[in-house]
Amino acid sequence: MIIMTYYMDVYGCQMNVHDSEIIAGILEADGFTNVDNPGSADVILLVSCAVREHAETRVLGRASQLGGLWQNRKQGEPLIVLCGCVAQEHGQDLLDRFQNLDLVVGPDCYRDLPLLIRNSTRQALVEFRKGDYTGIDPLRKRFPGAFVTIMRGCNNFCSYCIVPYVRGRERSRSGDSIIKEIRDLSEKGYREITLLGQNVNSYRELDTSFPELLDMASDAAGSAWIRFVTSHPRDFNRETVEVMVSKDNICNHLHLPVQSGSDGILQRMNRGYTIADYREKIRMLRDSIPEIVLTTDIITGFPGESLDDFQRTVSLLDEIRYDNAFLFKYSERTGTSAYDLADVIPEHVRLERLNYLQEFQRGITLEKSGELRNRILNVLVTGSAKKPDQQAARTRGNRMVILQGTDYEPGTFVDVRITRADGWTHFGEPVGVEDI
Ligand code: 5AD
Ligand code: SF4
Image 1 (cartoon, rainbow, N blue to C red):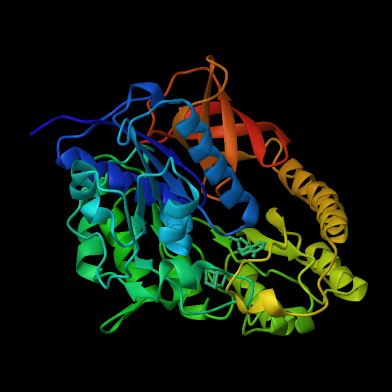
Image 2 (cartoon, rainbow, N blue to C red):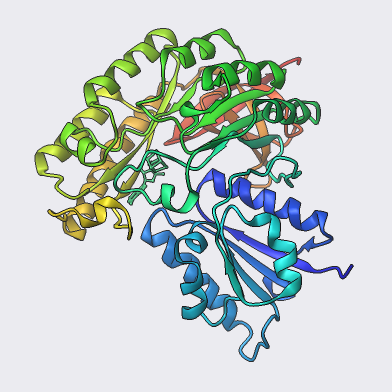
């Protein structure tokens, strides 16, 4: 077998990050080896994200730039492969538009990558397939953290979202294979296991629902922490909260994207809940887990968003007081139903609203992280920080903590006193190591 080297860039969400670990697992099982420099690779893979136009433009820019590195490149030297959601979205069109691209491979077709690369025929392979990647050993790169995919695809068709078109319909993975993977990870020393899916709360395999899977996952994880993303407010339920309460190793963090504070906009977004429903779920959650760390996603400037609608979003942030929020300005995606909606909000208004909300939320984030000053929290040391004399860690609530010193092996749980916070990043001094 000829050994080939590969270089990979990844864009987008955690699902894509984990897919890139699956791709690496598939390639290395077939004799490929990884290199850090695109200039010395036989194959360059770009794992793309299509959720907003900006992400799409970036990856295509990168493909052109990489192609430009080899001005007189003969075909296949090196091979440039576009994977991920942009590949699925545009398929063959990309080969017609970008002479530098050799292969376009969608998220369900990664098992075919070694063959496609070795054949090196210019083509797009973007079929939807029923199966998942069970049986592949992903090459994980985030020790002591590990992602485990529990479902792929989405059936919700929120009107702004391209995901159902590029990731296909919802498919839940077998509970047995998920639990086995978690048990293996825990035995290998992984200490933070994140269950991944576009809409984890609608997981269902045979008779197993998400709360039941979560309960089993918690047992299989042993002393490792369990997290899960992403939850949909319509499907997140009391049973899930009950499991979170009953298990010590399930993290007290919930990412519950609300998208807008206005019922009218939520309806146009096809989200399937009202603000009253959402508020009620948050109340139930906070009653049961007062220390819960809550984060959300918001879109500004969705078609038809009036000033009143926007103010309702501001009021909601003020009321809920999220620990952190990921804020985006609306981006039109071809093929989604919102693409055809009237009352388009001008780009500068989307941006103004985004900036306003960012400033508003920053105050809340700072206030909430400031409340942690002098508190002692148990954190998981995850690895090195930017500065060589510091280490990075995470709280159960998913807050980032920077520790002075380099005393701990990644994967160690340590009690730290929080000294100060800058937004979502906190600084802490170790006060001891937990015996696990
Ligand atoms: N424009 C802007 N933001 C979007 N998101 C999804 N689709 C779009 C879009 N077309 C945001 C949502 C989602 C997050 C992952 O990305 O807030 O929760
Ligand atoms: Fe997109 Fe909505 Fe599915 Fe999330 S739940 S991936 S926003 S369609």
